[in-house]
Image (cartoon, rainbow, N blue to C red):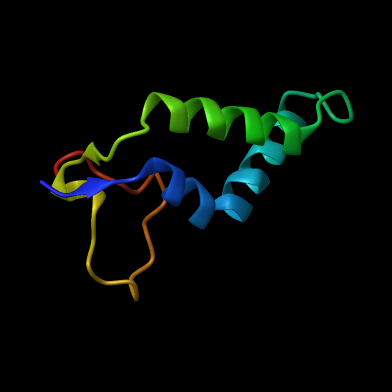
Length: 80
């Protein structure tokens, strides 16, 4: 099984994760009450601290091709 560094994944997906956090907070009606950047930094630091060594992941988490777009969650199947 391959290994990943979660902090590198967070860094690579920073803009997407920040956008998702903004959307989640807006959906909960919490606009303006939370500093999303500060929350994101705290979350990624805590998560990276819990996973400070490379983590073993299944092959389902790793793909060699970058040309394919990931499917939306509603279209994904567990048996993939």
